[in-house]
Amino acid sequence: MPVVSHIAYICTSKSWGGLEMNQLKNAFWMMQRGHKVMVFAQKDSQFQYEAKKLNIPVELITAPKKVFDFKGAYRLAKLIDNLKITHLIVRDPKEMSVTGLAKRLSKNKFFLAYFMEMQIGIPKRDFVHTIRYKPFDLWSCPLPWLQKQVKELTSFPIERTKVIPSGLELDRFYNSFDKLKAREILELDPDKNYIGLAGRLDPQKGQLLLLDAFNQIQEKEENYNIVFLGEPTHGEFEDYTTVLDDFIRASSMQGRVHFRPFRSDVETFYAAMDIFVMGTKSETFGMVTIEAMASGCKIVGSNKGGTVEILEHGKLGYLYESDSAEDMAEKIEKAIHDSSFKEEIVKEAAYKYDHQLVCKQVEEALGL
Image (cartoon, rainbow, N blue to C red; front, side, top):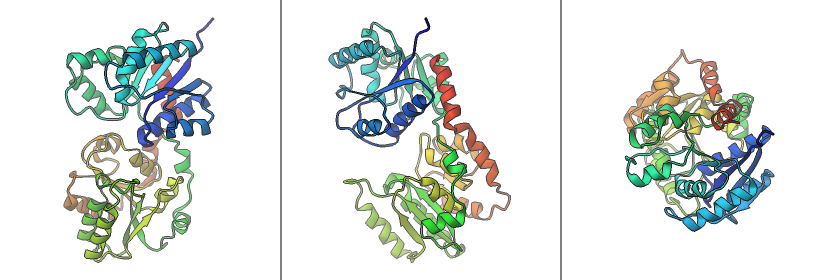
């Protein structure tokens, strides 16, 4: 009889950010495609609550120690054996040590896969990291530049790496409201043009950088306004909003900068925008860039990190010198006056990130 696959997704974080959301989304999509799926989560974590909302079975575990957590690994291995798990998916590098140990202790010798969400940064070819990575059967990288990092900065066998992008439910963006309706919903002037930036209000997201760039062109581009979608993270950078407000007043941009709270139907935000700016200094992948592409926006992004490959080195948008307000301003102006732009081209380019296509690639990589 053929072995029935049972896929488990582990998330021991109590945070609720992009990494955790992507882990849960992928678990849900694979369940929708008919696979037997469950998740390992911490008690009272947002991941646990969100998984239950989606009717994904949850097994509670404790957060592992960073290294040499033999007790946690033994408990995890026992759970994996009892539940007959055939595949375990890891996204957080903090969980690589305990899951690798669990595989060594497991009687089932399940398929262990790491889906990379963060760049490596520094060399990890030392003995400890090499041993930690050895049990993994797959290291999935969302973009080629990250696969290159794995090759250059680790001793992990390149033949066990795959480039599989992060997925997105593109139909939401392809079938969103038209521009006028979206602006009505967001309470924006239908006769103005808008430059948007989506993300929590955080210095790393680049709202202040965009304001600085816009200040340099606002007199020439009188019909353009800025829209920020997002809110401060509770307890973090709450004074950043004051910094932004002070800059807006000092630069006489009152009435031309609009703040809108985060909304689950983010496709409405993109539909209302003419230009989308990725203000982050260096984004590992940048789902918001793909969302903007699927919405047919003109895009201006940093020339570092994953944005470069997503925008195909400038073919699908404008790349500005990272952290340079002056260069960002120049690229925004070029985008504003780009009469050759065709939104159907960027929409078509986004299709390779469709979650169904991505799930097929995952299935192939996992041998399902």
